[in-house]
Each structure stands twice: as structure tokens, then as C-alpha cells.
Image 1 (spheres, rainbow, N blue to C red):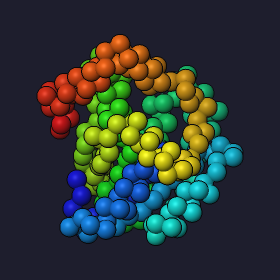
Image 2: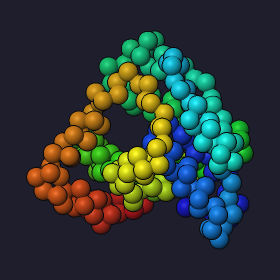
Image 3: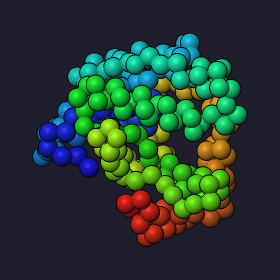
Length: 217
């Protein structure tokens, strides 16, 4: 996942990716392979996004922080008026993040996806696409010659929340107009309910994904 001489861009957008950034910075202090970090945040064109905590954090960590202005939110919600905006928004954000990463000389992009994201994505693909699919720990993008890595993929979301709360981290507030009203939120709530009834539900789904060897697992 991380090799000698890697230049890794971390897409910083919320609690998960801020946790990842801090973890990778700590990893640099003892890992036997030397690598460098860049932090990148994409704005979506909405007013009122406060990046002051993230800017100060990157300064304290000694990591270069790039804020790239986009109009993705306005394109999705105002121009296209998408009824199901998540897919288009995600594609536009991925393209912009990869482009900025390449311009900074990075060969890898690190995303803050965690164990719960893996399970939720698997169920979303099953329910709404009729296929068994989730994202891989490492993905090679041949068009951009970039690797996408997900170092937190075995970390549960509750562990990330605990770390953020314990360290008084102020994540970037999600400015998306659809936040909390998406298919992913529906699946997240459904999983929470199922896991309360059967506490092994998430573990079994995650285990099934690994045993099936989906997407490089």
C-alpha cells in the first residue's frame, strides 16, 4: 500500500480523512519506508465552509495544504438539478482530486474510507445495482497513473469518532445539500438497526466480502 519514495495526497473532507492524515503523519516517524504527504481539500462552491482548523492542523503537522476551489455543488444542484446527486458529485470530486494530486507530483491518493464504508458500499451495490461489489484497499487508475489507497479500511467508524472526540478535532462540516438524506444514509441506518438486533451482522458481512475476494480483497 505504501512504498519507498511515495508522494501521497490525502483528500481531506471530514473526520475520517483528518484522522487518516494524522495517522499517516505519525506513521512517517517510525515506518521503515520513507514517504511524503500532501493534504488537499476541494471546495464545492457553497458559502460558509470553515477550513481554519484544518489549515492550523496541517501547519502544526508540517504538511503542505492545498485548497482547490470548485463549483461542483452548484453544477450538481443548480445547473443539473440532479434528483440523485451522489454519483455525479463523487465522480466530479474524484476527477478534481486526482488532477490536483498529479499537479503536486503525487503518485498515490489516500482516502479515508473505513470498515463501515466497505460494508455500506457492498449493500448499496447489491440493493440498487444488482451486483456484488465494493471498493478495494488499493486501486490502480491507468488513465491517470495513480494508485488510490485506503489505509483505514480495517478501522471501524466508531473508533474514528472516538479518536476525533478524544482529541477535540473539528472536522470540516459537510456542506452538501443532500447530507443525511441519501441512499447511503438509509443503508447506514438500516445496518445500525440490524446490528442492534444481531451484534454480529457487520462482522459477518465484512467477513463474507473478504472470503469472496471481491475487488482484490
